[in-house]
Image 1 (cartoon, rainbow, N blue to C red):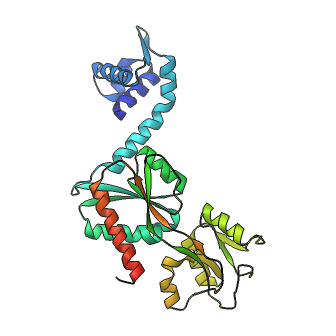
Image 2: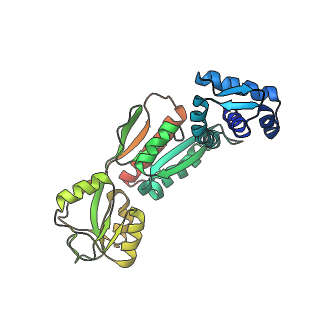
Length: 286
C-alpha cells in the first residue's frame, strides 16, 4: 500500500473536504478521489461518506485513521532503510544484540565494505525482542543474537559456540563472592543459569547490562567479571586479565537469524563473509 495514498486519506479526514486536501497536497482533486478509491478497494471497506458539505468518516474510517500515522511512519522508514543509494547495487540491513555491536557487528561491517563494496549497509543494534519485531516490520534482513526467541517464519543457524568465563585482573580474586566482583547481565538465559549455579549470590557493588562497558571498567579499575571467551585473547596475551581456575563457565552461543523462506543471494554472500571472520578468529588467523 502506497504511503501517499494513506497520507491523502489523513488529509481528507483532517480537513473534511476533498478539495482542501487536494490544495494542501498540491494535486488535482481527481487524484485525491482516485487515491481514496484505491485505499478503500485495498481495505475492502468504505472509509468516507461523500456529502455536498464535505467528507465524513465511517466507523471503519475512524478505526483506520487511528492506525494510519503509524503506517506512514513505517512506510517512510522502509523507504529510507531499503532504498539503494546511488553508486550501489544493493542494500543489506544488519541487526545485532547490543553486546555484539562493538565486536562482531563492527568486524562484519568493516569486512563487508572491503569484500562487497557494491552493497550499502544499514546497521541496527537493539534488544532481542525488538530485533524480532523488526523482522515482522521488514526493516532488517538478518540479526546476530545469542538467545533468539522462537518465531514462525524465522530460522536461527548457529554461528559460533562461545562461553562466558570468570576473568580477573587480580589472581587473588577466587570467586564471585569477592567484593571486587562486577556483575554483568548477559541475558535471560545467563541470569537463569547464574542463579542456579550461585544460589547464595545476593548482588554486587557494581553491575552492568552492557558487556563491553563492563570490560573497560574492570580492566581500568580492577576486579573480576564474566566475559566472552571469544574476545578475551588480546587481554589475556597482555596479562591484563586471567581466568579464575575452577569457576563455573556458561554457554553463550551466537546465532544468525533470518527469514526462513525468503531467498536473498546478497545476504547469503554476506553470511559467508561473517563465517570466514569467525573461522579466522577461532584459528588465530588475520
